[in-house]
Length: 126
Image (tube, rainbow, N blue to C red; front, side, top):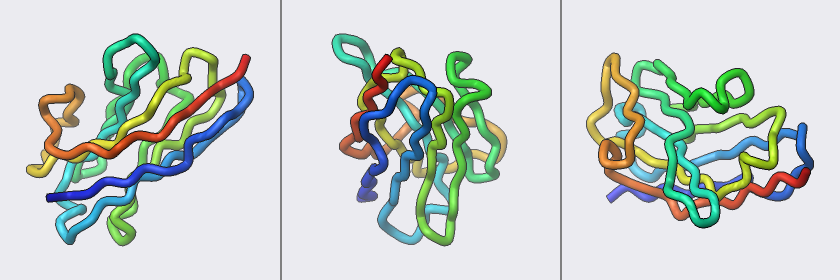
């Protein structure tokens, strides 16, 4: 069982930045695909960004050019750098891991992932 622990959420003004981190347990992190999802109040959990084992990335259109996903395999950590934040980015952000990493595909739906963190709240005030 892989444990995922997110951190870095908080309250920020519109236009500001935050960096989320997600640390994974175990020794197989470099072989995982990693993703970030978010869930706003009263809405479903939505895909935000993914990075596969080959460091190929994919973003939902609404965050392209503002968010950057990256990974540090030596630290078992995936990051989500969020710039130019908007009120509509307010949500609980979840980190996810896919056990059998892909060479070319970047998983972008919830069922493709095997493990989930508990989430970290991001609130953007307008």
